[in-house]
Image (cartoon, rainbow, N blue to C red):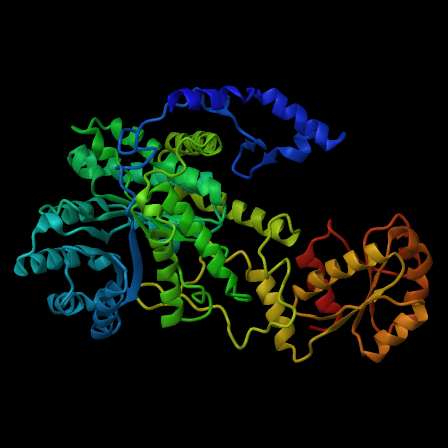
Length: 614
């Protein structure tokens, strides 16, 4: 068998990286290789069109479960499936928890308001739940987190549970409160020490959270989220060890909650890079065991790219996101229900979200293989690139005084806001795509009365953006406001495609224009083509069009555009689909509106709405 295998490989001549590149250059037929084939990422590095063994020769690969844990904290990949439950009605919350646990969920996150914290509440909430086999996570109002931890520890003892089998998180993250509410909390270490004392007999119950998922949801780039997450975690490590907490204890009480964007391969690499960098940070505190540096990660699908319109596409986004995290080997995953943008998720939506992960386990078997991406030249190279750029952000933050100082100075918030604005600009110009929002919208869709769901903080007050805090607005928000304005105006503008001339060009430009104008909820009327301008204009007026878009080739616009514009005589807005060489001549004739790939879609549609009185 070995001889046959050797013979098989000798039949193939090795191909060098240069030979691959030469073949690509040949196929490009003169086009610039760097411009066409190299992806300049927003994360600060470039991605090549192909990778070979030579790109990873200087990367030292450890086995899954080995320091620095790049390939996973163990040789198992059996992550927990988490679902969140509100607890305003404690009996309903308990019933729901028992139901979803029976349906495949293995981790629950309870959201608890401060006024609800009591021994009776905890007993009712966890009634008939096997607390030794279920990962329990509690997001409690910060003012009552210590009280809750003490009551929970007492409850576990009273039930006679094996305390070393109780696992999960009692989340305390004061810096996250500062990012979201703007209120500076200086002496949080006293609360952390009290939490450590309350959970001392529960070694697998973590109590210090790094909620970097909030950065992801505010529009951070991948390297920003990771770099700041590392600085965030280091802030807590430093505070605890300075207060006399042993490094091993401090590190094993921190849980990282990270977001997952739709950048599939880069997200896989992000989680792998995160583990290796965190292990090296913890090592600097000289723990007794290197294993203290294992980063425990809960991954949450992003809210930043969820959409109100075409909401079923949200399922596709969250599916690829969950797959990234699963392949990367995180400890637990929350998939947000597709309808969470506009309503409290329905039972159906929550069931779908849960089943998305069950499919990854029981049909894709991703839980059976440790680090499925390990050894991939591309993934290993991405992991290194992301680690390099994230480390730069970490070091810059530390040199400026640490993460807490950066938050108080507003530099973190400013950096994330700049990234968010950059992504919104890219969306408006279609350099970043949200299907169903700025590209390929559903022409006949309406909101069906749905509006973005108001978010509330743990005290019951509506979440509002304050100056100096993270601005957590979804990427699609401005496009959705535009489309809702059209819908609520009571009149849906009709956009008529006056297709004429060159068949291929008129069809391509009509399709482009329909997608362009439908982003604001306009009714679009496409046509097969007209023999004359007169015929096309008459058809448009008969259809009572509010907008007429002439769709033809650049060369033919010189012939058709001005006659069509004059024939309309101001009875409808006139648009030219394209940027022909004769544009100046057309503008001198009074034509104002042109749509093409280089224009800002959002600004153009806002201007059209204004002209239509919307």
